[in-house]
Length: 355
Image: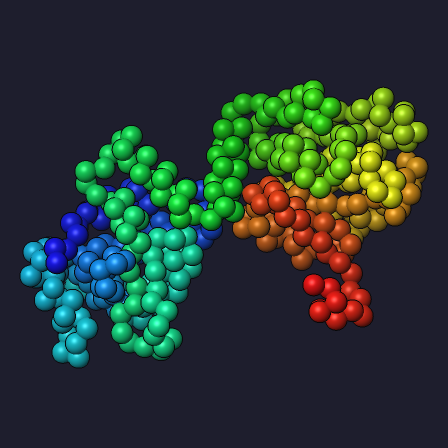
């Protein structure tokens, strides 16, 4: 069997950030140099799915520039056989120390390439086996062919991403791209009543847009925007406030967004939304302040909901603020718009009753 061609390390390093753009889960483990070297060794050994060839992490740590220069099929086959035998010796110029195997296995492969569909692990072997069990996805391996460049490379990467990255990962990528494009221009937001507003550039505006255009439509029966505030724009629907006989004072410390479901089953539902790109979630103190604001404005407490909106579950803002989120509130992620998290205060019900 002919072994696959061996790209240069630079080719792999240049293409990995394109294949795994900002927004991909555990992106660092997918694009760093040690991951590029892991892929290079897998290609050198011919460890590509459907070939029945696999590697083990020690083959990455034991690889050297001297060995890599021996690129004929016979030399590569001999190396693979030697690396899996008990007679192997570590070369003087090995890439990594022996104890670096865990980095290759646990980070580059199990947390980086495998969850993102770029590599596979044999499932019919014991966890502690010393047998080789990692290979590259066939279509992923093909992305490093020298014959691919420019538009052909872009098309191949796009096709691979659509076929292998999860829906959530693709949503994160799109969200990050929107944030990047919004950094230099205004963010246009279509309101539930059909009109539009322009928000200032920035990631928070991208999340605000998603809340108004997606969250409101998916989780409210008949949504209306009562209030939206960001650095350059503050919009209050005075007519809606008057028709609902509410008392909204823009001078107060209002949330980022106030939505109203005018056809909620048990009466009008008012939804306070805090948009979090860096800080400012609905913690217990903020919830109490919003609850007091609701009562003052004429809202019935049981007809008020509290939502903290993030860009993504993998975002640093969520990891940093999640411990402070208040119970009996909701959490929504723009990258997973069909889902919502409910932080339900404890009860005496068993899990079987809550499912």
